[in-house]
Image (cartoon, rainbow, N blue to C red; front, side):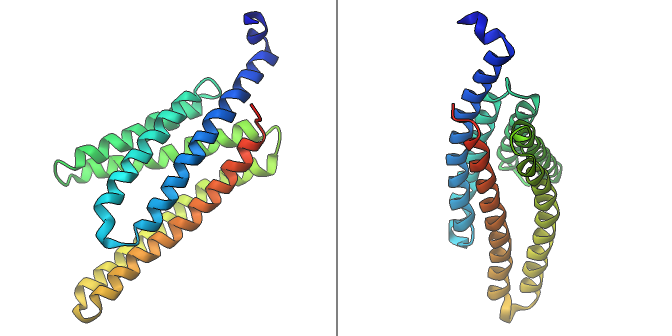
Length: 200
């Protein structure tokens, strides 16, 4: 049995089992992330959502690390994810632009490595899905930055215009939440399709 696991076919079966198990777990965790995005639209729940996101990111990081035998990109994604959580916890001690910036940068790397890892493992089965994973990285970065800028702009305008401040503040938060929700749904669809290639 041990000898068979050392062969290319044995490693392929082992990787398939790992992907089946941990991509399934990752999908469940990311469903929770979807719920957090929806709740983020409610300002009164911002503290709860913030802690929920940290727990979700921590769980996702550890799950990705379990997939490191499959490809090094999963390990890099997991490490970056854990660094993001660490930066978030450090920033609780006080607002620190450098720590927040570092967290954002490592967050982008986590997205890149995870999505490209998914593309790598599924490419031999479904090249179109692999291309969609790589394209989703660009969408998340570009659309995420634009939606963030729009949300900040609406919040700033809301603060400057006292009469419509509440509406614009809600509009800013709602815009970011809606775009994040759409991207997360696409992510979940791709993740489910990827896991289906690995029955375990």
